[in-house]
Amino acid sequence: MSPRRIGLMSALPQELAAVLAHMPHEQRQRLAGRDYWPGHVGDTEVVAVVTGIGKVAAATTATLLIERYGVTGMVFTGVAGGLGDGVAVGDVVVANGLLQHDMDASPLCPRHEVPGYGQSVFATEAAWTAQLEQAARRAQARWASQLGPATVATYGLQHPKTHTGLVISGDRFVATAPESQALRQRLPQALAVEMEGAAVAQVCHDFGVPLAVVRTISDRADDSAHVDFNQFVADVASATSASMVLDWLTQLGATQGQK
Ligand code: SAH
Image (cartoon, rainbow, N blue to C red; front, top):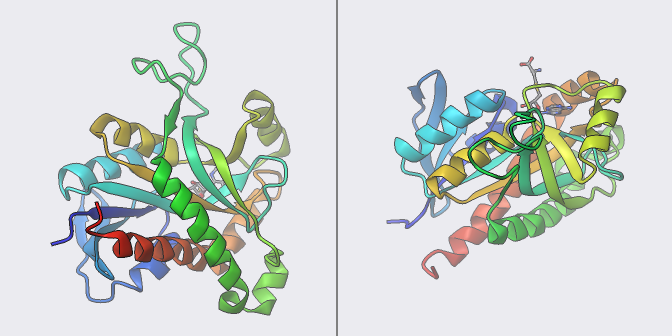
């Protein structure tokens, strides 16, 4: 039996579709409003799940993955808005840490610090983050042939980059230039903004479960974010998410038993 069982999480069904296509024989299980697919990808035991959008949905799903399904680690994948300079649509951001940008218990404790934890940033699993960075680069090299020239041209995916750094989460779809500018000023080290990762990171911290988060940039969190986001999710997000996660799982499978 595999020593590992990895939770594969995405907020939206479109983000997980191509991963699920690699698990054609698995049975869906409905639990607390979510769909879970326990099964295998290659030699690795996995549980795939669509978490729904936002921090609470992601946190309850992560908790059930651990408590009900006994996962020993999890990977969250999907799309995010680019914040950092040079973080463009089609780039990949691998999180080395996650922060809740809407957490603010000041003046009781510093802004962004999670009360009771004494910290605002929750780290991801360093080894997995490094592996996913490599997996993302390999996957990006395949996107042109996988997605076709028209999609590559539409989304400017000719030379996508991979970045590693801080990802911030909050219960807001950031879709105006002033709001993304304010976030950039307040948290200049943030590369991308999304709505789930930091909540999952807090749960994983509580349970001592390793986590990785890898996001493809769908929009720049600016005034055209809603248009860019919807098109990217419809056309690209499923393939890009799966290409990275499946590549990484193959690697993990190859190292199975070495640990
Ligand atoms: N259209 C959806 C809402 C999507 S919310 C609906 O109607 O239900 C955006 C999702 O993509 C979230 O899961 C979040 O993690 C990610 N995301 C992408 N771009 C984002 C941005 N600019 N701000 C916040 N989250 C973003």
